[in-house]
Amino acid sequence: MNWKRSVRVLWLCNFMVSAGMTMVIPFLALLLWDMGVTEHRTLSVWTGFVFSITFLSAAIMAPIWGVFADKYGQRANLIRAGIGMGLITGCMAFAHSPMALLALRFLVGFFSGFITVSFSYLARVVPKEHSGEALGTLQTGGIAGNIIGPLIGGALSDLFGFRPVFLVTGLCILLTLLPVIFWLEKDPVAPQTKENQASFKDVFAHRPLIILFIATFLVQIAILGVNSMMTIFVQSLIGNTSNLALLSGLASSITGIATIIGAPYLGKLGDRIGQAKMLPILLVLSGLFALPQVWTDNIYELYVWRFLQGLVVGGVWPSIQALINVNSPRRIQGRVFGVTASSRFLGNLTGPTAAGAIAGAFSISSIFTLSGLLLIATGALVGYATHDRAWREEMKEKIAAWTHRLHSRH
Image 1 (cartoon, rainbow, N blue to C red):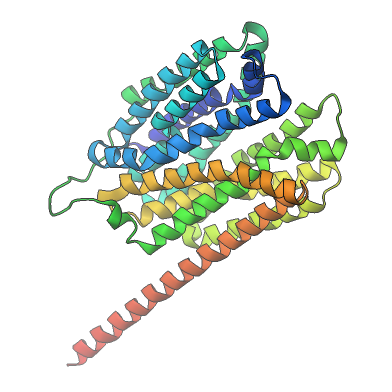
Image 2: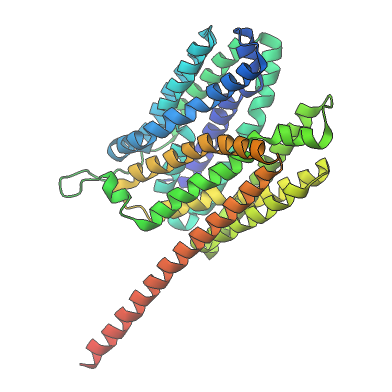
């Protein structure tokens, strides 16, 4: 199997899906306003619900789609996600009430997970010595789409109105099916026999996997929590200027640009020195770069710290995915990546809520304290678990060597 071609194909698909799904972000609140939600506080609540409800249904369904992947493979899972997400997103163009839009956003979550599934597919087909490099490269496709998508969506909504953008988004997602069907090879599936029956009990029996699920959840809280509050923080620095949206968008985008630069190199470095050694270092460094942002009082200083953090964060997710792949028996890999996706979606759901609560209780800058301490604590947790496991494996090897010597003498 040509895994490098698979990386290129899925990079393009992830770019199109990410760009499509983020096209609606710039005008979501404005669309709800047109639907009659005009009171300021009510509009904020509805916008938050409509944006985050997808993560809730996605978290519920991710393990179920993991079972589907164990039976039929992740390529079939990609096709399933593309069809469901594309058709339902296109239907949003015909929603004429907030409740209808909320219901469709909830429904699209049942079929979502294209990007997470693509990571799982690559983890199956890429040689383990190149997994960090491949997953790091793949991550840049989704991030590039996240940066470009809102710009395209804003421009299209200005030219043609809000509703046609949903049709364009649905079309973009459906078009990703073409390279998946015609250029992507089917991934190997372990036969499900009575003696080799997979179950979620087997997933949670692996202690390293549980640690990585927790790490995925905490990292998403730390990253998404800050991103959701960025506009408010930038406003606290520069006030209500005419270009507030541009400057706050740049504060978020600059991290994505740095991630695109850093992810492939850090993934390749992790392959060389070991992802188990790499991940704790990246998490701690990410936290250390987040903490100085608490005391930032200049927008350009904020940009510098956000860029430095983005360089390091780019290696975190590929490293987690590579370690999950290493620790997953093939017969339960679909279930494992289903639980991973669920952990990630729950983090996406919890992050903005936690950041909003902390910002309200303390100050807006305290969100960086939350993010930094969470990332450092996650790095310490992963480092301890990895060191503990490595120590046990080393002792097992020494005992086996001593036993072999005793047998040789006799």
